[in-house]
Length: 312
Image 1 (spheres, rainbow, N blue to C red):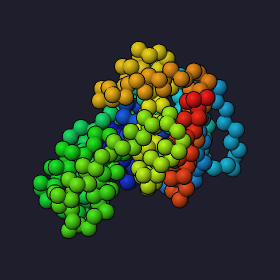
Image 2 (image 1 turned 30 degrees about the vertical axis):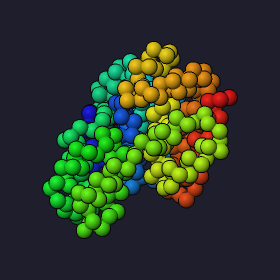
Image 3 (image 1 turned 135 degrees about the vertical axis):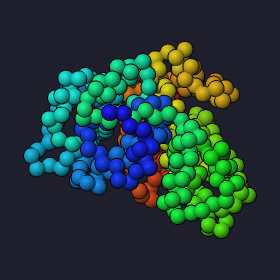
């Protein structure tokens, strides 16, 4: 069964009552939000352990009779077949697959669509209608009424990528309700949100320069999360593409000035280093799921580890 991503995000009472979840599309931050909401809602109704696995190829569940249920977060669609899902149906817990669109995902999506114990989500950049739904949801949750000019300004100017839209709304909603006017909102939204993205392009600078730049731009946990999403996007481009031609097609047009750096970054990677990158991204995601005071320090360590893998 196919569901809209916002049907999970904007529904606090969403019940994850299926065995399998496949999250696809090309908007990584929305994919992550859907995945996190499914996990969080499942944990509200069932005590469970979160297990990260590469794929379900030759999967074996070693759980005992009295162990907690498990949430398996699967990094790859390798091994997904109809008969495999039938076999996995007998195990405890749920399986959440998350992979951006590629030539391989169409066949797998059809398997999940036909499976009665599955939900399928396609995540793409937010359109105007989706932004209106999200904005209305936030205003209702905070019991806020805003001026009509502020409302439509937000609809037009908020980001099309979910996590950045959410971060902008959270900044605005921290204002005193009396201060949410058009001038203040414009000032908040015109802050250069691309600075965290630009930090990635300084990856090969001296560590001292990286650390100094990081300290200036990354000051909250939300900043760390945002930087992670940018890094994940650029790293995933390298992981998912085997040749320069395919890689070049996936680079956003607006980054034409950064193509020299991105090509250099891509050419430094072989299969072994890609596997190290996958492992780093997975372990970082596990840490960032937890609210703690070490996230800013950990974010810097994560960023420097990408550099270490890249230049090794």
